[in-house]
Length: 78
Image (cartoon, rainbow, N blue to C red; front, side, top):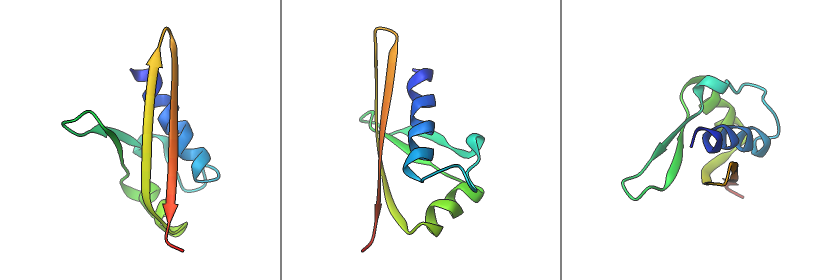
């Protein structure tokens, strides 16, 4: 659903602590053959993620009955 993808973009920005260096149009959501969603982040958005030391992003999206939600977990090396 488009609403779930919108929610995923918002969840990523919140996980990053704000939108500094992040461009909305650079956040893309792709799917594996299994249906598992993941981010593709080109350009300055990828740079913003790397600057924060984030090594892995996990994404979960769901939608039902006109509602959509997304969760993002950002992992960084200790």
